[in-house]
Image (cartoon, rainbow over the protein chains, first blue to last red):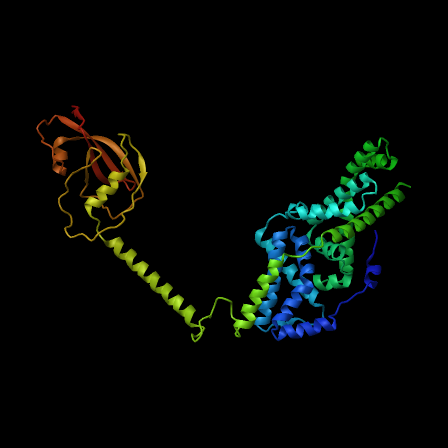
Length: 239
Length: 219
């Protein structure tokens, strides 16, 4: 088992609000409309991506992103924005906390299965993948095909993860938050985040390996030669 | 040896997952649509600029009107509507129904075939206050070629929901006593009629299909 949180922790941890956050929070308390739009511009991507990965749906993510900012607007109107304490965390963390609660409420309300096709079957997704592989077209075609297939499998596996693991993977793996920020957002300790990340990666690796065996076997067939490692792995799994 | 190999494979797989996660993070960097910003901007402008009280966007827009006025008015209106509905239902339940209209309603559910059937009760829409009540029943000839009469002892105020039609034979004198314009000259003949029963078991109406189907009385 690998514990990678020590190195992560050293990487630019920021568990309290910066002076920008403090200033913005003050303006929000004074019901400054521009401050509200500034908040949206600064953190829309982060909130939207978190919701997109948590719900697996672009439409649901847009809807919930709007709800997150409407909650902020409500708090501004009711003069309750003072509940945000810059000493306890950042504005982004505050927004992601609201987003997390809304995503949970949405899942409880609808009780629907996560629809991963919404995200990874979009033309935009295909365009992004194509652009990525276009840059690397001088590389081995088979390796690129395998990577493409693995990305798809990985995303599906992420959406199938239990919620607590998915939250950790989305925040720390996909959105590159450090463990401390993730711990504040998810209201648990850094050790818990590290543990969830480790467990989630193990689950993902197992799923990837299971599907990867097929890809590797196909690759060996195409190459016309058999990789002994793949053969050993297939045999080991077959037993 | 195989344990070491397994650990190595596991570590490689986890490293691979980490690399792929980084790649996936790069690939899924996207923003919400610009329309969302516009919607939020408009909402913020509406709620922060236009309404200093910051009430809900659609509430309390009318200036010079107290905030409690609209909900109170709506509650009052709702209460009045409910009371009116209860009164109308109460008076309708106690209002006698014109025999003609009830007969028409029953007639409409009798099928043209002479087979017993079950149909849904017609709605007695548009009941009028009756001036002459309980006049002696008279048979009505219909365009479908039958005469129907509501039975005097049936309570048409009770809507049972369904009707059953039975084909029976009746003596001519009985039919005459019920108000059918029949000359009871041949007393040993019976006439086929359709008896309409409500699902409470009470007979509601007798319908006489035309032309008359006469059968000999069994002894």
